[in-house]
Length: 325
Image 1 (tube, helix red, strand yellow):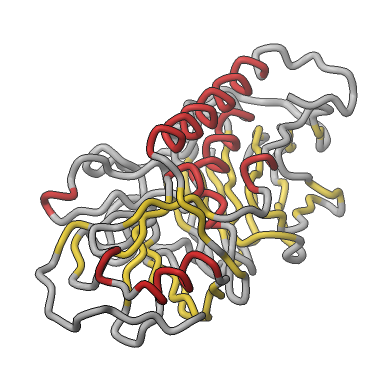
Image 2: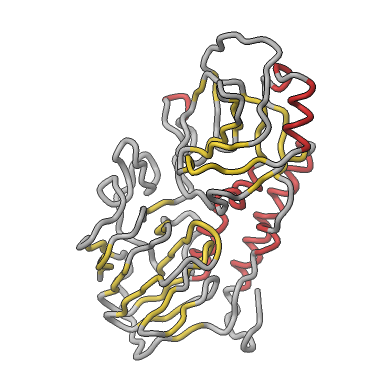
């Protein structure tokens, strides 16, 4: 059983929750930009949350499934269709053999996660199936998918669906994506900013520039100034670290960001907000609000608890039409 790429997308790669615990060796975590959407796509098809998903950007690939398959889409809505039938996000979908999944237009957000029941048969490199594009490891041949790729699925259990079937129950994750300030903590070099720049950083919005990808987002806004210009030794950074570039503008590191950097680390975005940040793109604005560490931990735990509640709910799929979990 395999999935065929009939037309390549802009940047479609397999991603899971990344490679943990290797930063001291210079290996970043990587993995899904939106870990929440990836977890949901897996939960909806009965997989473990850590199973790799196909992370897609628009325009996305045209995909054919050789055999009948159970799948789910989460995150961005790219107006998916199969044989002219609209395929909604955040629902379990049953497709018959030789179904072609097409993405018509970007309805909302930036990154869509596709999960299939059983997952794909991918090599595990350093305990992860994630594609690390800059070094060419993991995922499918260490690269983005291209036309004529045939990616095998792990599931060998034959399914027999004669038509497209869309589950009546759905997941509503939007609480975690609502527009709000991004929760941050002061970075190690916060006090190197002038008082005026500290105020500007926390009280004005910044815009994501076209220079944005899986490694980081360059922001544009008020020009920020340091109290003293001095060289820094490279120091540890991680996804969500906000550095101050020499031009006075911030840079937010994302999933494929480096593990060390020599620019001042002025803020750190709370982990719970990184999925929401992953769904922003060029021209979108963000602003910041300080949060106590204890509260940030509680919010992250609440997000994880919600995912587990959804997983439990999926064990009771006989829901009235239109019900949510």
